[in-house]
Image (cartoon, rainbow, N blue to C red; front, side, top):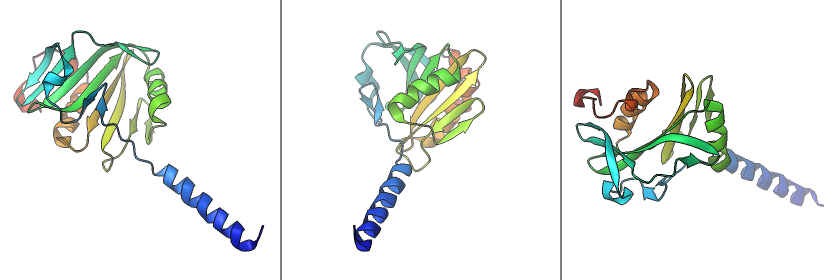
Length: 173
């Protein structure tokens, strides 16, 4: 192999590896519902949380499995009737839920002692995993639709505040 060919091969390999390392986490929604779609797209559901312009629902017939992990709840949250966040709760360790999420979406961008984050502020979407006692919560949200509201809701979800149906007040988000 000539020196020129070898150099081209090395450059191409390096560029390919660089492209893979900056691949952005990008979910376009969750389980057939795209970010920004109206609440009617989730079908029959009950309200689990409401505050100001934010309403979260749980489908009446939701698949409560994420891969091999049994879920306690899947909540679809809408701001002004546009999907901007989904919250998964599971009675497993954060490690177990993270491993299952990794199988589909690759390794997280950031690992923490009790959680992980997929995506960055520049990504189309982000996922944050939190551990609390014997449960794990995964909050998946759009970075393009109400990211400030998603950040507030994410903090409440991490504290377990999302578990109290319809008792939040509008000033908390």
